[in-house]
Image (cartoon, rainbow, N blue to C red):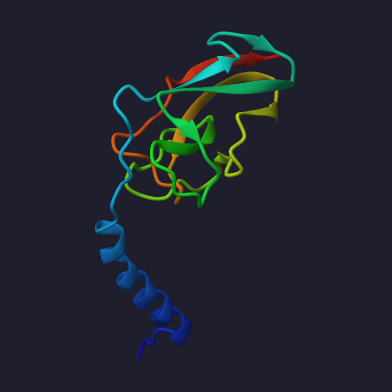
Length: 141
C-alpha cells in the first residue's frame, strides 16, 4: 500500500488552502498613461561586462515594497526572461528593487542578453493593467 508522508500531505493541504486567496487577490490599479522604461542602456547597445541600468517611470511614483501609497510601485528587472504572470507575486530569478531603487549595476557574461522592467505593487504583484517596459537587447563584450 502506498502512503503519502505526512509532510507532503501538509504541504498539499496548505497549497490548496491558498489557491482561493490567490484567485481573490485584488490587483492594485495603475494610473492611465503609466509607463516604465530604460533610461540606460538603450536597445542594441554594446556594453562592457559590468554596466549601469537606470530605470525611468512616468505617471507613477516609486515606493519601497510594503508601503501602501496609491499610484506607486517598485522595479523588477528581468534578464533573459519572459514576463511573469500578472496575477501573482513576481518571484523567481528576477532582480528585485524593493527598497525603491531606480538604478543598479549589472554584470553579465559576454554575448547577447535581453532586459525588461516590470513594476510591482507593495506586495510584489503587477498592477492592473500591468506596467512593464519594452524588452531591449544588449550585447556584452
